[in-house]
Every structure is written in structure tokens, then in C-alpha cells.
Image 1: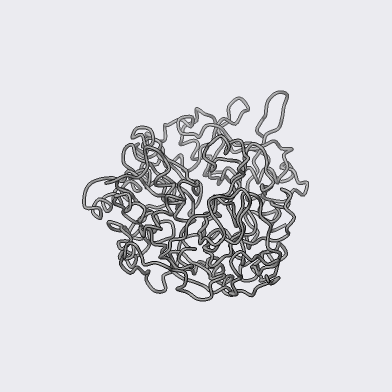
Image 2 (image 1 turned 45 degrees about the horizontal axis):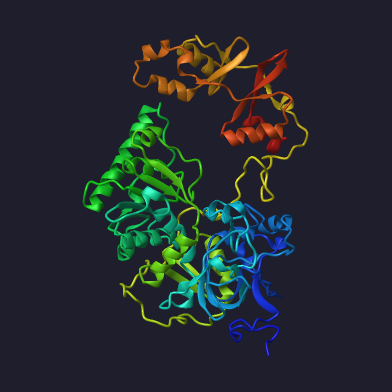
Length: 591
């Protein structure tokens, strides 16, 4: 007879589904650090739909998305689902798992009760017109990440998944190892195999950022399986042996270079020249490690803002930079000349569809993909695993938590198909990279969504721009020479002047513009240059009746510190003053 509730580690008879289960829950009232947000509770075992499967979880993978879920940022996943009609006031996370099928819906044909499976995290509505038409479900508006955007993930005795998510568990892997690789492995596989003519192929050269991390370690092995050569970028020489054991030709230590960050403006000849020197040194080092002067046809990207300029530069003519994240920031800069003249491609990539996940898993089944498991936690340590991620104290590689399995090392029923070398990261190896955002963050589109949480940067208390602005402009005319413009700046102790013509603000000249104008010119030549030749055309403005909160949001969005304030006179917007962040700070902090 089936019990109502089984203790953690007490495996029910296969196919016997109890009414209740133990689970780690997140609730809105305890959003915060994972050590506090995750709490053990007993809840009902979820019912399944006709196309769903109930899996008894033996082990679960740990990913950063549920560190965000625990904090309720950048999205409150519970509130979003409630707005969509789901009644549960809790979240059970977990987007990677290995386990045993205990129940199947009536339409399920690919798995049966008793099958040992791993699950990928891509879900979608099978009745979506886009999906029914045979298109890539990754582009469906119904696509969701299981165990982050959906409820009842793998941090419980039972999880419910769509049948197509289930794949054969590699028989040579333990439960904890099998739970660790699917999310990162499938993501890397789509990046490298999902983009037509730029799919990785034999003898290709590939640059892999973060080679010792979860994504990078998968990418190196997928390249090796395809017959390609990869060079890994790492944060320390102590990771070289690890990456080489996975199949990398060699490694580049990014700490040996200092040109990272957003690309200098193309007008800044000195800054751009300095950056060019740095990126050329990186390229030369790449050739040296590779052992031949070939540039990478594929660049496997995920740091984003700090590295995209380098990735675009070093990528071979006709090659592709493929990116799935932006762990160093989202505002990446690109020298467009390299994009069009050398016909390179920048491709975004997000998780994987069924065929890509299945192909990746087949590599794992065949022994060509090591899960790169760095640490396994007990069931009671699940909050600790996420707390270490929150504090950036977790090791590289992938991590798992035992759920139904009671000890490490169980679950393997066959020998490893392709015995490989022992692989281990340096002891006490910790992350130093910034926290990545969740693998699926709703982005604002034309129409707002239930998940959208965008709002003003500051609370609207009724203050108008006219209440706080500085009246009067420090301005020059388009035909004023730069000596005149410079003297106006110095006399008024300002960093920029507005260029005004016919009672209209037509541009801005900043101190930076003056410095750039001096490059390649003598002092006398620079003094004679007209303001219109170096000014930044156009001027960010707001009406004096604009709310202060809207003005601040506008400045924040554009990354600027001041706006020219205008007043409507007949059919014209006449500039009358300036509102700056300094004025706002004075109001918010001092007054």
C-alpha cells in the first residue's frame, strides 16, 4: 500500500505515487539570501497533464537562476505565474535533474514508468500555432524554463515535466553526475551546432571564453567531438591542465591582458590605438597557443560587455561570434567596419530545442561528454549550494544536490564507454566573474507582459523639472571657434556647452570633444576649428513641465548626467535651462 508521504531518501515502489512530498520551497515573504529563502516543506504531489511525466528525483543540478528566484529579482516568478492564473503561492525551483519515471500522461509515448531519465529545461505549449507548424519552439511565445519560470522543478521528491524534456540517463553516470550537465550542455550545443553554415565542423578553430566554467567546459568537449580545435580563455594558469584534459588545444590567461571593456570611441585616436595594441597582443597570443596563424571561425561568447569588442576583432573573416549571456554587462560595443567589411556574424543563442538537446545527450551517453561535476551536496545542504553561488564562493564546473539518492556514487549501471583521464579543478578554486542573470529574463517589448517590472528610477512625488532646474544656458554658436568655446567652459566652470542656433539647441561640445579635436592637429589649428565641426549633433531635452521622475529615468536610460530644458513657445521648443543629476542628488540626499 502506498504511503501518504515518504521520507527523503526513502524510495517508493516504482509507480507508487504518494499524495504528499518533501520539497524546498521559496515564498515571497522570505525573499532574500538563499540560506533564508529556501525552506523545507511538505506539499501535495502535483497532478500531471496528458503530455506530462511525473519523475522521482534522484539528484538535481544547481544553476544560478534559482539564486535569483530566491531573491525575487529581477523577476518575482511567483507573482508572474499568479498573474497568469496559477494558484500556488510558492516556487519549487530546479532546472536540471536525473530520476525515475513514476507516472505518465495518456498522450506520452517516448518514456514509460521505470525509465531512468535526465531532463532538459525547455518547455512550451504543444498547441501553440508556431510549434504546431513545425517551427523551432525556442521562438514560441510560450517557451519557458522549467524550474525557474515554471513551478515544480527538481528541488523536490517529485517533479513534473513535459514528456519531450525526458532523455535517457547515461548508464555509466552516477545520479549526481547525470543531474549536472544538461542545461549548460544543451546551451553550448545550440551555440556551436545550431546556426546553419556556422555550425562547428572538423578542423574549425574556436575561441571559448570561460573554458573552466560550466558552459566553457561543455563547449570544449563539443568542439572535440566535432573534430574542431578550441582555445580556452581562463582566469589563471592553474586551470590549463584541466581545460587541456577536456580537449582544448591550449589556454589564454585573461589576466595577462588589460584592454577589456567597452570599445573606445572611433574619434578617440589615442584611446583606440591603445585598445588596438592590446587586442593585437591577445590575437598574437592566440596564434601562439594554437600553433598556427589562424583566427577562430567561431567565438563562444558569454561575458558580453567586456569581451565583445575583442571577440569581434579576433573572429575570422566570414566567421561568427555566438553569445548566450552577458555576465560582465549588456551594453556591448562593436566596430561595425569589422562586421560589414569582413562579413562577420553576431548571433544570439538561448538554451536549445529538442533535437539539439537530444544530440548533446547522445554525446553524453556515448561517453564523449564529461559532466564536469565539481561538488555534490546533500539534500539538507541545498540552500548552502545556492548561498555559495550568491556569495560567488562556488567552484568552477557544475554542482549537484542529492534528492532521492542517499549517497554519492550510486546510479551507474555500466562502465564508461570511453575511459578518459581524471579531471579536477585546482583545490579552493572559486569564481571571480560577476553573477550572470537568469537563463530566461523577460525583456520589454512593444506590448507589456505580466512579468514586466520596469518602472521609474525614482518615485514620482509631484516634483516637476521646472522646480529644480537651473535657469539659463551656457551656450555658444555653431560658428564659434574652439578657443571661444574653451574659454566659455573655463569661465563658467562647466564640462560642456550647448550649441544654440535660432533659439534651438542643435548640439553639444564637451571637454572630450575638445581633446579629440586636438588629436592630429597643432594647437593653433585646433583653436580655429568651428564648434559645428566637432559638436555632437542633437541635444537630449525635456520640457520644463516634465515630472522629475521621468527626467531621471530618461537620463539613466541614456547614460547621461544632464538634460537641456525647453519651454514651448508657439510652435517651437525654446531652450531655457538645464536639469542635472547633481540637482537631483541634492534633492534626494541633502534637502
